[in-house]
Length: 124
Image 1: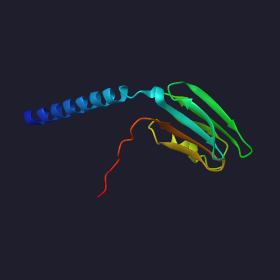
Image 2: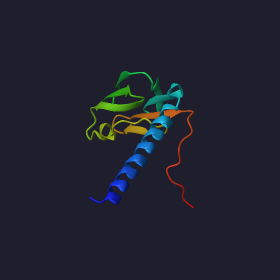
Image 3: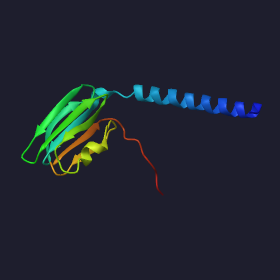
Image 4: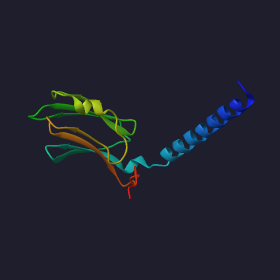
């Protein structure tokens, strides 16, 4: 390996480290006290839970049963007795505006709060 290759590798590692630290700092500045997980059943608000709590909520309706886990400043559908289990495959959500939807059981979980949403892309 040549000396210039080592300089390039070290430079890339330094840039990656700086970006990681800046991202962690940005995440730590978000006030999660005002961010909640809203759980809706059949279009109606069922429960609102702050995402800075750790809680497991079981939702039993005439359509089926869902279990929502609130942890690590986000939410996750850990169990659903629907036929396709797509809601479980969504995984963990934690950003404002993210949703988990279980259509057969008519349940959805949405992360909401007064944090400014980031723009994913701008189209002209």
